[in-house]
Image (cartoon, rainbow, N blue to C red; front, side, top):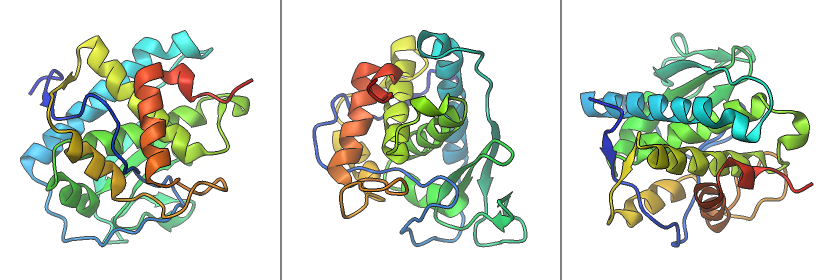
Length: 225
């Protein structure tokens, strides 16, 4: 399976509904299922990782100083089995979520979360991977470039990397599956608008952030100076 794998994403983010996931320590309202990753899901996750990492490696110096380094990827884990789950801050990662852990600079996503989401459409793993990669990007920036609404900024970076990868030809967007992605974005949205750093933002805010990155690139995700 090549990195030119066609994924069903939408061309314009105009419907309400949004959210991806929490970074380590954040909350998520997902009921985990028994982990059942399929071969197709694992392939999609691998393509998402490759395309997202390639985007940031290729475009880092268009927006930021220094040299881009890839985060570590733990990948799938079983959040229902604390004994085998990765540890962040001394605590095993839980079920029904995905994480960027600054301690160890790694990304991980629960099997149940990914398997459940993938049942609703193949866009799901791309959103999860790109959002968590956005948190890894934040960890590499000068603090002045990290927005107070860090979750919304990670959504914006996710949009920038996925649409940027499409522009680079490493992902291909198909027309006609707008509702699939909107539904995926909306699963974990907060019920109220963003007010403090740990908030993910409500549906409209998360869609707007993702769309902003997709249309304006990574530079559109940075705080105004």
